[in-house]
Image (cartoon, rainbow, N blue to C red; front, side):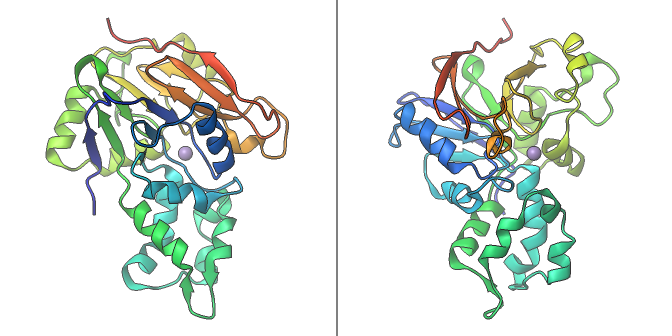
Length: 285
Ligand SMILES: [Mn+2]
């Protein structure tokens, strides 16, 4: 099992990009990467997790995990996926059809999995097996760079279990450094890294949460859908609902954020054109 928190140095040779929740929308990412002329030798692409389910190309998104320039944290969808396939990963035990049908992932856009089951051989396809092993190694938090260049990548939120005031709502860099030294994070925090919506869920919260939390570096996240990027307590949420634009023309799409240039690129299935939008992230002075 790999470490839940991983540290990477700043990228001095190329650019760092962050992509929102992919949910199987590989072709949208592919378009955005071509549009920014992504340099696979020098640039890095970070993902806030939820690579799979709902959209048309879930396995293709998981195959990105094999690319040396791609860094993704586990989302709640990868967690549900691993929960279903852990007995298979450990003991080659395929989930029974009743286990499969009653699994939480099947209620959440996981039907694509069925295409990779080889009933005759009681196994999954080789490409599925390869992807599954990569998912099992995904971390929960990336810490990238130092000092003023530092940023984090997580799936949902760094909210604390019992937070009574705004001053004490989220974990800070010093807490995350301690988790890194310990090499573990609590089950409680893991759960909130997958599921928390305390900061991002309500529009009313905009009134109460400042954009920056002193002591917490910019923390890119996803999980809660809105048609635009939001920043609260140093969390920058990039989930703009890519998979919701598959069949319906709406305001949802996929965001690719370019840290160095403070801008993002956006595309949806229906509005088949890449938009480039300036977007400054506020930091602690
Ligand atoms: Mn999610």
